Amino acid sequence: MVCAEEQREVRSYNQTRILVAFEDDYRAYADALAKAISAARPQLDVATVGLEALQTEVARLDPHVIICSSPNPATEQQEGKLAWVELSVDPHRPSKFCVSGRRWESLNPSLEELLGVVEETEQLLVGSSRRSGAC
Image 1 (tube, rainbow, N blue to C red):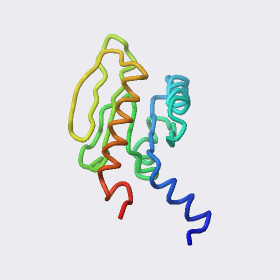
Image 2: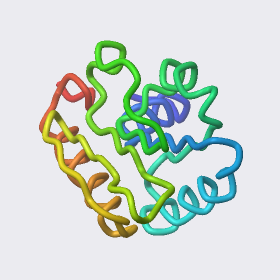
Image 3: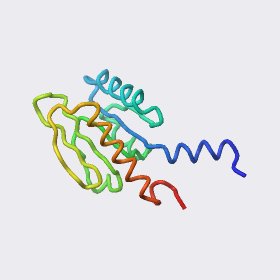
Image 4: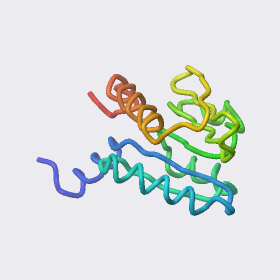
């Protein structure tokens, strides 16, 4: 029999984790984006941090999806991260996406496109017993 505390830990471990990080000048944008993602997909665990704390929070939270205003700074350190989105704050510059090694760019992506990245990542998690904790 599994106690309630163990069930919460399992649920939290299996929950898709999203980390949103932007410079302080774009903090309101990051917060609005995180709230929009949470509203559209309440089952997700969405956190926001300042860009200066990104590496520390990546190590601490072990997110499945990272959405930030900077490129992935160290591919080797991010090994195992399923998705990284470099979301441009300039609508005339493309945002860069990477999901499980597949890369593409998009000009001024919509919330629906970002949620598509989340959904694709969730599908990858379901198919991966190592990341999902399945037997």
